[in-house]
Image 1 (cartoon, rainbow, N blue to C red):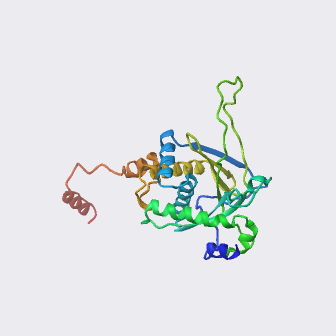
Image 2 (tube, rainbow, N blue to C red):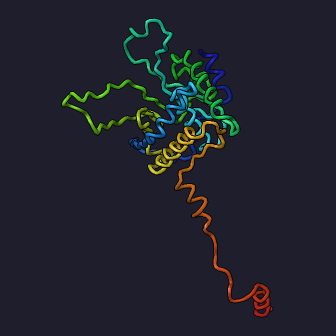
Length: 281
């Protein structure tokens, strides 16, 4: 395990910066929570893409989060935390074991703009499968095997794929639960929870000392756009996938370019020069 994690983390000496956090400190930490749901059409398209390409939906989400972190940080290599069940299928008698085995471990991704998306996602999935052999490693041990100095975090964000089994509603029953809401808290500055379903939910839990509410809204919008683009343009290269929302594109291409100014209709250019020279001999 030590050899694997040393190789996996070699060359990383600081957590991937998001470049959007405030890094202020208050006596009592306050956490915010914001969510966004993909459309049913986009959710179905992502699920279909995963099935056709023999990828897991989790792999596609991990790739999109890594791509977003790369765009935000300006780095071609990023590191973030992922939660693992700690119950590999090849563990003898795993179905008879009781208790929480869940663990949080680092995932390192290398991104270059000219990489073909599907080939890269295959690598992400293969890397994740390789790491599963060592998912029993404690995060403290993994950090000690890394080059990040003691006392500094391995990562500032974690990705949690909540793939829990659900029981379908029975219309014959008179009692039903609706409008269900849940709140969670993370020990990390930013946690992204993914809830699969007919409309995939993106749920961000964040430290308000580090992130403004508006910043998280924008981040979720960018992630939504990336996932939509991945579903619609799976043959693209990584650098071709758009992240800006339609409103941001309009602002940059249209609003920010409204710089036209009225011309001088009262005289020709040479006449203006002559008049200026006459008034300032």
